[in-house]
Image (cartoon, rainbow, N blue to C red; front, top):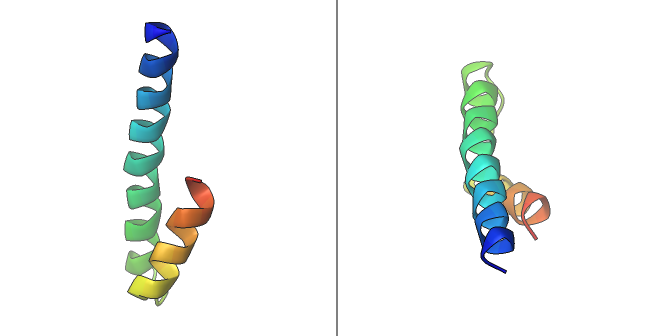
Length: 47
């Protein structure tokens, strides 16, 4: 069971880290990412 918890923690960390990188890159490219859109996308990526 501990292995499954560790795996879940790794997946959550990785998703959060790289989702943040993706949002930052989109903003640097000039895309308008409002907080509502960001929250919507994050909720869909991490159910």
